[in-house]
Amino acid sequence: MWNKLVAAIRRNLSQILLFIIVIVPLSTLSYFLLYDNYQYRHLEEEQKNEQMAKVLAQNVDSYIAGIKVTLMGIAGLDAIQYHDRAEIEKAFASLALAQNDISLYWITDAKGDIVAKWPDNVPDKSAAGKDFFDAAMRGSTFVSDDLTGDITNKEIVLVAVPYTNSKGQISGVLGVSIPLEKLQQKLVLRVGATGYPILVSKSGHFLVHPQLDEIRKKVSADDPVWRALRSGTSGTINVVAPFDGQRKLFSYVPLHEADWVVVIVQPLSEFNAKLYDLFTRYGVVIVVVLLIVLWAARQLVIARNREEEARVLQAEKLAVVGQLAAGMAHEIRNPLTSIKGFVQMIAAREDGKAPPEYLEMILMEIESIQSVVNETLVLAKPHPANFTPVNVSGVIQEVCALMEPQAYYRNIKLVSSFPVNVPPVKADRNQLKQVFINLIKNSIEAMPEAGGEISLALKQRGHKLQIAVSDTGSGIPPDLLARLGGPFVTTKENGTGLGLMVTFRIVQNHGGSIHVDSTPGHGTTFLITLPATKTKE
Image 1 (cartoon, rainbow, N blue to C red):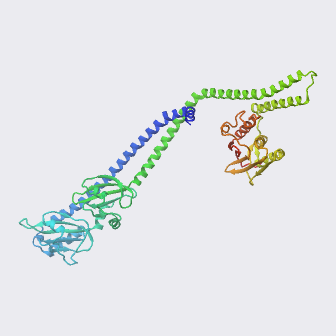
Image 2 (image 1 turned 180 degrees about the vertical axis):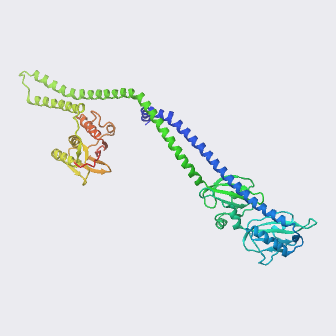
């Protein structure tokens, strides 16, 4: 196993070095360039979203600050000081004409009782004990989370400021109620294709969201994501959103005029999609450059190794010739030794006559030598092939008819099966016939004396034909399977292996392959695969 691995590395050493020297550095450089670009684009996207969040936060801050200034401005009116309800309602009505996104203007005394309100179409309700009232009476400007107004019964946020009398004492509270739907209109902004802004209070209330009712039911504002958003700082986090399980960018900026946080939400998949489009263009350029560099480097390696490959090829040819010559010498020497012995025996006879059996043995040995020479000539000087569309099933049937008498004599049954409408193969008909003659002849010779069965099956597999020649003979030892098809590799006592070598060579010249499966004592299967053609014979 280790030796095979070392041999494979040596055979492909130039390709391995080429890969290490060219592809690895270029691929590494390309990766870091793309990664740096990704980081830069990611940071750029975060900064863009943070900038949008800052702009929205400034808008909302300006809106709330404007309301506070307006309330502080009307706190100095004489009507406010004397609690003149009619005049206060006139002032509120004038403000409502100028700012129609406020649903209710109201004023209370120091006890929390309503002094005046606009519009005045619902009953007065005391503000005593309410958080906004208590905070304002302590001198603070108060901006609420979302709540349901006691007077309007609408979902609102509330802004309340204290007002003082001529002695500087807090006399009550001025406030307005802003419907949440009006506040949502202040945060209308397009963020990419599917992104959106939201508004969340630091106490954990969702004020603005595209699916406000749904998110209130599904998500607690105490989730770690929302706790990070309410931290009091600005920034961007990349986390999985708790309400839909998608990874998103959350860019957040806290307000100055209220304990609220403006958040820009953008799905990371949308951001990545834009980067993928960009990287695809970069990737195409990088791949083209890599291919050009690889091709140029490969051509250089091929040019440098061409001479070495020619030397290796020549050495291989000489090795094959040497192996073939050694085998021929062995196969011819044995018959010549027999012939020499019989000639010496004839010469030693007193009458000088050659017995018929001596002459018969000499002729048999000469025929053996002639067989070896003929098979070697087939390898050395192959006849030019005449490729035409050939019906393989027809060729097999002809060969079976030719070999059947020899098989019958050995008590061997030839069985063949062919499907209908099998496409032809482009081949030399005579060479193809020689392949099946050789294989069937080898199978017959591998059978025991009791006989057996040889089956030939033809199947179509896509654009290829597979012909299986199977026998129930003695099989081939595993140590010979790997060398099968070489000269003088055979299981037969007097065989040369050249016939099987010719068979392998013919199939390879036809663009096919041979796979051998054998179990000693149970038989052998030669699986021949040939490319089919659409042209009919």
